[in-house]
Amino acid sequence: MKIKLLLAFLTLMLSYSSCYASFPVKRTPVATENTDTRNTTTEETYSPIAASAPKNKWVGVALLVFLGLPFAAHRWYYKRDVLANILFIVTFAGLGVWAIIDLINILSDNW
Image (tube, rainbow, N blue to C red; front, side):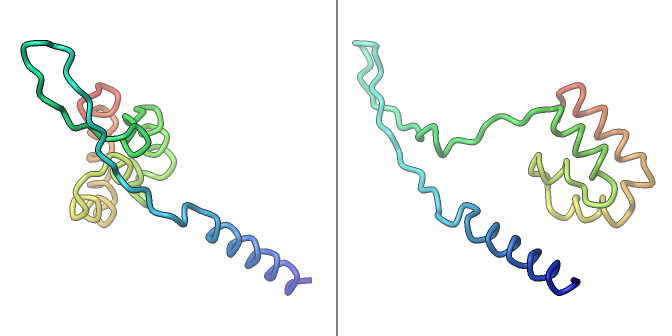
């Protein structure tokens, strides 16, 4: 019975990892022209597929509440400095003080 569960779990994990974004997304510049007749410069923008979406503050709050202290998930979500994230994990969020400051910053949109 244990071997069946183990094999089922391994099969699930292998199938998940093989179908999860196994191809790179290339950023391609798209040229758009300015509609102003006096200034006919060409601006270079990136395709909307490769552009990153704005971060949702409620996702950040949920990550802070559920995965904040052990993993600093909200800090990884907002792409903070790696060394600061590791320090956050090692010090247990500054014994909770740093987590409260992060919560206030996320809710007040100062992140």
